[in-house]
Amino acid sequence: MHLSKDLQPVLLQLAQADAASSQPRVRPEEQELQKLIDERKRLTDASAAAQLAVDDMELEILRIQEDERKLKKRELDDKRQLSAETDPERRKDLEHDRYAAKSRIADLLSELKEAHNEIAALRNNRDVHAARVDEANRKVEVAQRAVDALPEEEVVDTDALRGQLPDDVLRAYDDIGAAKFNSRACGGCFIQLPPAERAEVLAEPEDELPTCPNCGTLLVRVNPATDEA
Image 1 (cartoon, rainbow, N blue to C red):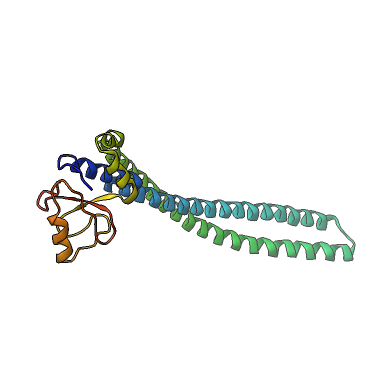
Image 2: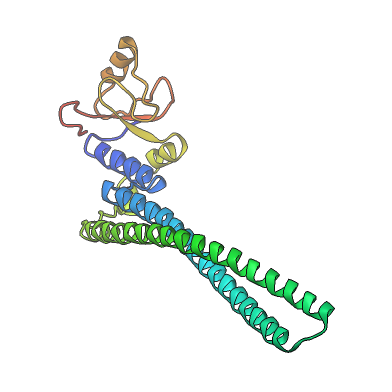
């Protein structure tokens, strides 16, 4: 395939621009930001679960306290009725109910003590998770500022590049592609050619585009020292 030496860098630039557009490059700062955002989400989910555990235990404490209040009221009511009741069977029932209420109140007080101990640990766990989320937010903000400060990547005008190339070269490029050849390996298939095949590629005239013996792509020969055509 014939192409003047002056236009070969244009073809290589077109091939590199097309390759870059098909696989957008993610810069290290952007990778770090995404990693921190993912970590923040994980920490935020853990913090929400810790808060939910606190909420559930607070509801449990309220339930115990409400049950205790009702039982104390029942025990006092039994006591009041006993002071006026003279029927033996009725007094027996009231005394049994009062005893059951007092026994259950004792159990509830034990449950309440355990619940208060547990909620203290749960609140501490929640606070630790909240602090981790705050730290994650700070790191994300710093990383976001680093990404925002990145220079805008140059947008290559591929239409302008194509306009500089002959139609037959464009047809061949659209069909089999193009890549650089650094005197050793093809930039399309990344195969290092055997010495004999390398010699054949390098022996082609400067205004010709050889093809890779392995993948068939057009090869633009570059200077290994400068990586330029």
